[in-house]
Length: 317
Image (cartoon, rainbow, N blue to C red; front, side):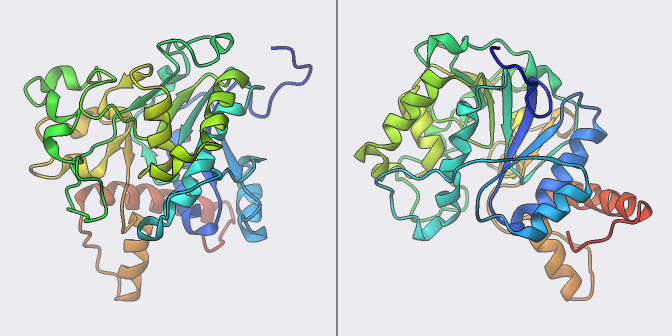
């Protein structure tokens, strides 16, 4: 690898981006879930300058590895007033630049692992030397472009007929083990889970795009960029690795969803399970949640907190 020192956490790691404490409960529960399912690989928190001291203390007191990364922004950004979370999403492209690692699997902090998915560390991708010119630049699951909440600011072509997952409804068994082709539907990966062989050359292609005016038209920041620059040249994973909670909803993609096969749940959209939990506690602690999948997060989080308290650790996260 050309490095004298062993990179932080070893040559293959999970990473997650953290810019504030709002997602910290999510990160801590994600890290707990990876350990619980017996992953051999550590989670490295990629923090930006905005991440505050109490956040650092929470990571350090739990022995979670962390590494500073720059806050990425394109030269011309779309106005994300409707979805301010997208301003932070550009920095999720950072793993492509972490060339001290052989393999980085980037995860969003609003995920939990329900089953071991260490096989992603050995999935075949292009060698870094190909510099983003091959056909297996990275791996990800498709974005769902159904827009089930009918958000008016979403693109007009985000409809079920254009969704890669819709193309799998007649073959639900296959959908558990194989993704629809990378060009199916609108051909856009979901940025929540990305399997990456870091490469200076690939990252340069990304940086060049970040510097171009095209980015002003990207509705979904990082994933729009990846879908555009590497159209059809990424490996489409089955939904089980990035099981967007909305896929499970009746009439969205419940045709392919099977609880027992899901390896990693992604709590996209608001409220996050931890927001819902806080709201419930304020209202006297009724445990009802809008979404049954939130109960999985809440029980893992309770288990984590109980274990931490037993070890004498009790901060507000």
